[in-house]
Image 1 (cartoon, helix red, strand yellow):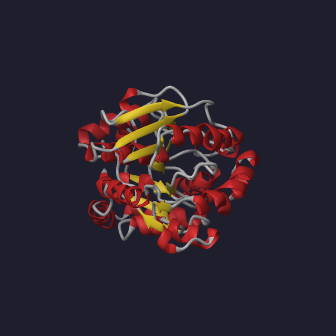
Image 2 (cartoon, rainbow, N blue to C red):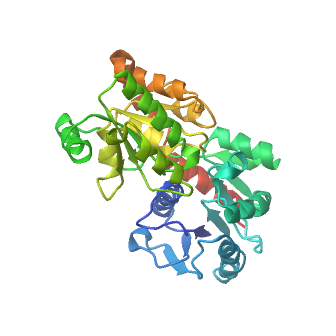
Image 3 (cartoon, one colour):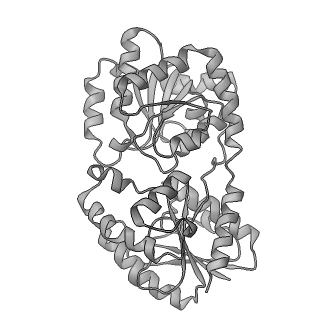
Length: 373
């Protein structure tokens, strides 16, 4: 079988959620199926670390596709021609894009459809593109993979797809996320917060991530004197983050709000040394930091909407992400109720066992095999 892979997002310096899903699933399929040929289609120079075996061929297609209309050209013209040239039997696209000008069957992954729920948080150029093409991509795909049951139901509802056309294949924990010793925690805290305990938010700084309400909730906890913690916001600044930046500068608790990223310290260490993860997003297709925190033995505060209750199970405190009071009460419970916190940590270890990259890769491979021409 000759499997084409949309490897466009495999960038060594920017391995976020979809790129992680691409890497983790592809390296397992390549290793498990050495008799199959995998042709990875990149849109720029690639890191050799992404060439997972001798059965992988790397092809660079121009132009670099980082703008909506360049996306259309890359998928509908550059990629379509190469799918024919390399006699691809089936295309694996780990993001919600495919070629509308190719008859090669495609198994496509949908991580979320946030643009429908929160259109105000997208650039207008991107939003117009998604509104025009994403429904067509779902219609054209031979089979759709979603990362949660919540996203599956979202796709069924908004694109009128039959549930039988959609299979759930979850995210799982990236390697390197594990508990660390007290000594290691102290060393991390010394580097980030001048030895102070902290709450961590992990993810991009973006309106949909609800960071503004998290900051307000943290301010409320500080004003009550119910914690001596700092709040570490770990991630990159994303689209439309200016209100968050202004809010931090104006905050009465600004001295206790720390900005960090992988230039400061590795994400695995920053997460493992936290007293809790506060991940109260307004909407998620999955919410990878949730299970990464659980794997590290860090208790989790998350939202009671979209996929997050599904991913958390009974191993987290769930709050209303639209309520600052609900979030602040959740933070206080995590920091003050030691018995509850210890119980959540144990439940978190158990909950994480539900998610396996090996299982996810196998599900995807079987769908590729079923739909190959």
